[in-house]
Image (cartoon, rainbow, N blue to C red; front, side, top):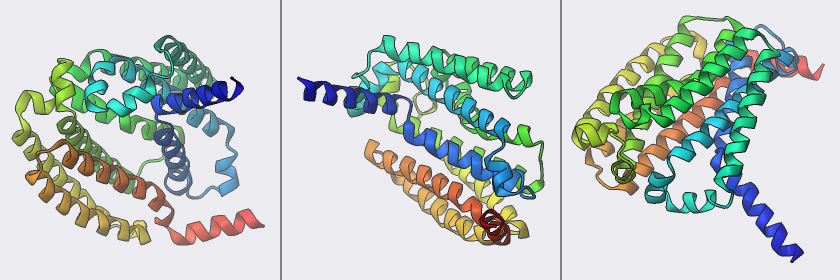
Amino acid sequence: MESAKKVSLFYKIFSLLSVVRGYNILVLVIAQYLASIYIFSPKKSLTTVMFDLHLFFVVFATVCVVAGGYIINNFYDVKADKINRPHKAGLDSFVKQETTLSIYFLLNFIGVIAGFLVSWKAALFFSLYIFSIWFYSHKLKRYPLTGLISATMLTILPFFVIFVYFKNFSKIIFFHAVFLFLVIMVRELIKDLENMKGAVASNYKTFPVAYGEINTKLISIVLLFFALSTVVVLLNHPAISYMKYYFYLVVVSIVIIGTVLMKSSKKQEYTILHTTLKVLLLIGVFSLVFIDTSLLLDKVIETLK
């Protein structure tokens, strides 16, 4: 009996982590801190950034509202997920919807309070983000253009809040943001191609449902071309240092992805492409430390003193 309870508790915890996309949350935290250290505040010491209490509250608030966003999105996508991701839908069902919704409200409340500990502007930002992700899940995602743009914007906003916090802007930050926006938008389009059956069953007029697979692929290719254009600009910027090797990988990957995409027609093929873009973005997160290798060395030495 005791063993059965432990197994049940394990499945519930695992189910909850699946609902809030624990893996994505972890990557988000790492990305926010790496961006803070190597892009937004390169002149500050590692310990100063890592132990910045206000930055911690910004990251913590982001974790809470993004996790809440995954919960509410999952709530509205139950029908579609049973078709598109039956295994995940089965795992998610170990925790009752009433419980996940209670956690959703709690996370949002904590997120706004954490924002208030930074400033009223931060609290307002997170409040608007909470409303936006609910509105996207409830309404916007049902329509092709608003669904695509809002999904991309909501994905990139957690990085924008770090930019606002440090009030740091430069040409390289701008082109990084444009590159990220374009690649995430392509990833969203490929996800829509992957999830067409569920979208039709849930009456979601996603881009492929509204305009067809061919047009969706063509739009994706155009966006990938523009992404390559931003990469060319970034490669000519001396400040990226050894991160240039990541962008060489990006160039090769985008060409391959674009070629394979035009030939793809099965769900499994779209899943591979979507996952490839996700891995490419993940590598990009950890490549931030190579923007300035001398800065990396200086920060490590300073920490060891």
